[in-house]
Image (tube, rainbow, N blue to C red):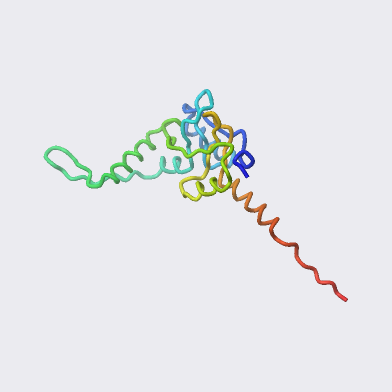
Amino acid sequence: MKASELMTSPAITVKSETAIREVAAIMRKNQISGVPVVDAADKLLGIVTEINLIMRNAPIIGPNYISVLSGLIPIELGQYRRYRDQLRQVLATTAGELMFRDVKTVSPHTELETLMELMEDPEVTSLPVVDGGKVVGIVTRTDLVRLIEQLEMTSEEPPQTSAED
């Protein structure tokens, strides 16, 4: 089975200038965990997920610094990077400012096995299906669970009934 047979098409998308409150409303109304961000030509720019929205509203945890001369140096670079990312999320007002830019994508011809391998990553909840640079659909974990349910139902043997003499 290929992505084109499993994907939801057309994918619900937003533009980079879409306000965050509108993105949240679209996601809630359509019961989706992420929405691709596209330009005017439907080229993928990034994706806004539930994680982006949660991070935007979570408390900011500042890094620990040491004071050297008149400057502050972060003790752990990882802490500083997380802090910088949190600030970016909190200050965002549009989908383009909030989105993850590094998005895993698939083509319509991507095999089911590859889709499942990609979805094993806890951070990947949806995979935009891109053809010629344009978003043509999306495959979500829900799509895979639906397929697994169908496969489980067809693999079960019908219950045996006993014939009473």
